[in-house]
Amino acid sequence: MLQHTALLYASTFPLVFMAYATSNPNPQEEALLQWKASLADANSLSSWSPTGNSTCCSWLGVTCDAEGHVAELSLPSAGLRGQLESFDFAAFPNLTKLNLNNNSLVGDIPFRFSKLPNIVWLDLGSNYLSSPDYSRMSPMPTLEHISMWGNKLDGMFPEFILSCTKLIFLDLQGMISMGQYQIHWPR
Ligand SMILES: *[C@@H]1O[C@H](CO)[C@@H](O)[C@H](O)[C@H]1NC(C)=O
Ligand SMILES: *[C@@H]1O[C@H](CO)[C@@H](O)[C@H](O)[C@H]1NC(C)=O
Ligand SMILES: *[C@@H]1O[C@H](CO)[C@@H](O)[C@H](O)[C@H]1NC(C)=O
Image (tube, rainbow, N blue to C red; front, top):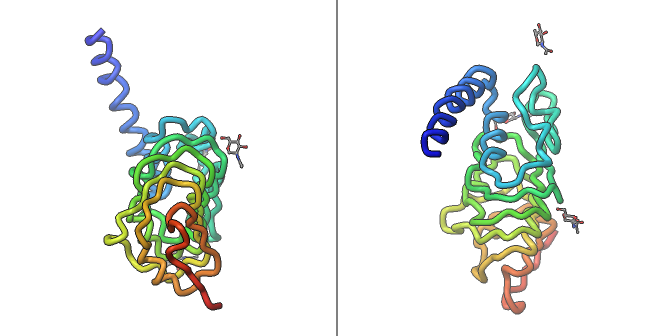
C-alpha cells in the first residue's frame, strides 16, 4: 500500500508541476487554480482548467476587463467547501467584485483580502467564516458594499469599516452583537 502511494506521488507530481509551469504564465489563472486545488469540494468549477487556449476569463464566475484582468469573481451558491487561506488576493489588483455568498467556506477570513486595491463589492455572507485579524488589515477606501452576514464572526468592532469612506451598504449581522454599536453612514 505504501509502495503504491509512493509510486502514485512519484508519477503524478512531476506531471502536475510541469503542467503548471509550462502552460500557466498568467498569475491570476495560477492563483485561481491554486485556490481550486485547496478546496475540499470544487465540483462546480470544472471549467477552471488550464487546458487549451482559453484564458480564465471564460471560466465559471470569472469576468475580465478589456485588458484581460479578472474584474469580478462571482460564485454564490456554488457548493464550494474549503478555506480562503490559499486564495492569493495579491494576484487580483483589478478585482472590483467578489461574491462567495452561500458556500461552505470555513476558517478565518484572511486579513490579506483588505489589500485588494480596487475592491468595490464584497459578499462573503452565509458561510462558516471567522473574523479576520482586524489589526493587520489595510484601509479599504474603495469598498462600497460589504456583506458578511451569516458567518462565525466575533463581536469585535471591525475598525477597518471606519476606513471605508465610500460605504453604501453594510451587513455584518452576527458580528455586531445586541445593537451595541450603531453605524450611521452619511451619504
Ligand atoms: C492555440 O493557439 C495556437 C496559436 O495561437 C494555435 O496554433 C493552436 O491551434 C491553438 N490550440 C487550440 C487547442 O485552440
Ligand atoms: C445555497 O446554496 C445551495 C447549494 O449549495 C442551494 O441549494 C440553496 O438554495 C442556496 N440558498 C440560497 C438562499 O441561495
Ligand atoms: C489594473 O490594475 C493596475 C494596477 O493597480 C492598474 O494600473 C490598471 O490601470 C488597472 N486596469 C484597469 C482596467 O482597471
